[in-house]
Length: 581
Ligand code: GLU
Image (cartoon, rainbow, N blue to C red; front, top):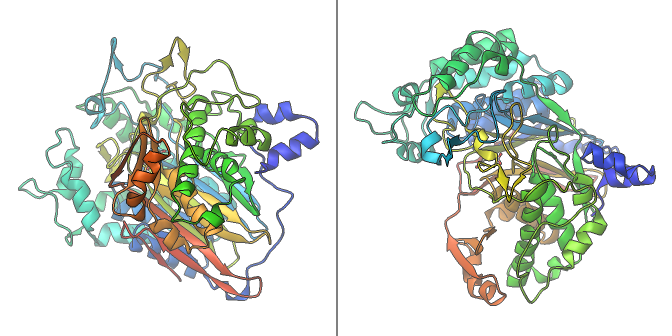
């Protein structure tokens, strides 16, 4: 594992600067110009819903770039998969051009200025999830619209307005409710405080969720999308829409919280230095802090590199044991060091330094389980933070696009939990992203890196990545939804494709092994279930097979420099699909 920035900065004898910057500068010496082969076609989009993939494909067909297509897909997902993502939430976008130049866009939500470390306390009592959702307290200022505007300004080929048309059509003319949306709605059937606007859209007069197969129109969403299309991103952040969001949050019947129109107007999307590293012959790039996603991916793969996973193969319990051990080590570092880089110094270069990772890897044995995993001491590690226990979460969508010019976009968009905060403004759900902060800010008298602060972005696990082969060509664009399982899903997709020679679809279909405080969780109904006794014998304690809500998407290039093709891969656990222009 060779994190590119560390190499660049170390060469320049200013490692301290690299640590201060806290992230890997991504323009890697190994990037080579590799124009797409002639049969790359007009590109491809892969998303968790075929109608959103189609929206992106329409944009590619009209001459749009991968970034244009990804934005159109993000907007269409808001309509057809409203429980997972949209303009009421945030996301991360990773773009790569044909020469492998990477940019990462941070559209993560921010806490309102009034937020404090004990934001989720009522006096001395910490509020539970049920006290704050549905409610205003966990809502962060949404980031996706300004992210889209920033990325479009740099990579857009079509007019901004054009990107909104497929989503507006779906919202205005209606879309058919999927079985997954119906099942998600059923969970909220009796939830008091679930916004009446959302109830009117998605529940019948009898209080039951609209059945799968019903056509639903969302004119309020069509109108606000039309307004943003015509007037630009500022119309989301300034004026009537901002006032509506602020009022929803401040006057929420459950857990109201201060959010002002100034909080919303002041939101900024940010371009961050990408975080890249090398795994065997492949270069992997993704979104650094405030996401912990690609740091976990690079750390785990770095610790695994010395093992011959290829020889072991996917049926080997030892291989999955090693993967789980590498993930446990990475999660321990994440819990201690990762947070918003505008507020805390995140030692990304130290965490992904090959020497540090080989020290971490040395803790792993093929025959036994590490008894007690704790965070390491990477170069640049601040001593002021305590480790904090992670929290489970669900609800997000990943999608990817490639275009005729060989550019790629890998985008994960989220409102955090299913239906986010449960509050709706203009037909879109407002996120509950602030629950990704450490709800308990301190441990042992020390603050945690991911405590709530006004204006701060909560730490994420989202891991949109782009993977380049030794020839400099894009090999895979991938990412996932599913809270803390996200980096775990991405790790097993990359090991599946890169080490085990699987197609991306087969690699996604594999089960996953997720570290848990008392052992491991493996996905029920997959071949991993049969490995439970072997994993227990290796010392993993409580290993249980449970259904896991996994959802990943990918685009991969199969072929050589002379020829080949893009293939989309959607999760068989979802209605995901890919579409070509
Ligand atoms: N909010 C989560 C994160 O940023 C993702 C939510 C999910 O996929 O369940 O890490």
